Picture (tube, rainbow, N blue to C red):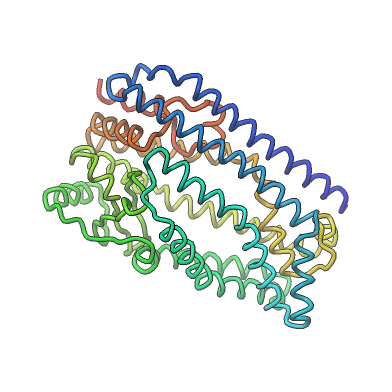
Length: 416
């Protein structure tokens, strides 16, 4: 059984990495083959120069993703079947031979740190080479490393309690530990949804109340019309890090708030801002956030139940390069390898997300002017250098939002 797991894991790791590389190369080739001309639907609003910039930006990002996927696959193989996790475990066993919970936490944190060592150079290159080249980066190097430190601090403060709770339950809560952990995890996530906007997000960005009274009144009228109650309207200093623009709802229950990037407010006129907000309200009206939370809870329930069974199977450890079975090693193995086994489900999740986007667009078209939403989207595609000609297969596999041409054509039906 251990050999079967080893063979299956290596096969899937090679297969998924190969698919990621193939899809990426296919996407770059498709984008570049359509670089010479702006699609007819956008020819009056997007210049050839902007279209070519988007094509080159998309290709540059995809090329980097291909390199990162290859590096991540090699590291994952080294950590698992290559014996890397067992080496980390042996190191901490020599230092903490009897303190299993503390040792387990250190092993998991060590594995996460090693994994992040692959991601940091790629994040740095994307920010200061790719985004810098195309005029999107506004970060300084000190800000980049400061953000990294802040994320680490927040991760420790929020992650340590849930990690120790997980290890304690796995070790001493009996055969149903996984159910108790699922309850703890679910409550923790609901709590984070409530407190994140007020207490955590300001640690990374500056949020100020929307000062434009005319725009504020217009937005509040739309919110009232759509039955949405928020804690307030805020502007985020997105321009401090990037020139990309966005708007979103955040929070849960009474803590809900509407957030606009300052870059978005600079680029769009009031009609377009209202249309973008109506789209976000469509997500609220169709309960997309609640549905995603429910799906997340379901997936975590099934995953923890599976982990509860795997933890007692010796082949699960030996098949993935671990010779010393333990509850914490079962947890870290599961966290590391489960994405490989779930990768082929990505098109289903992407399809579901695109369906939600179409529903939100339909809602926006009925509660604002569809023409203004089209105008806003075209500006955002142009200013964010989003390619107008993604490879259809790559898009179906990855994209959470519909391709620009399909999305615009559906909205255009409301304006005709």
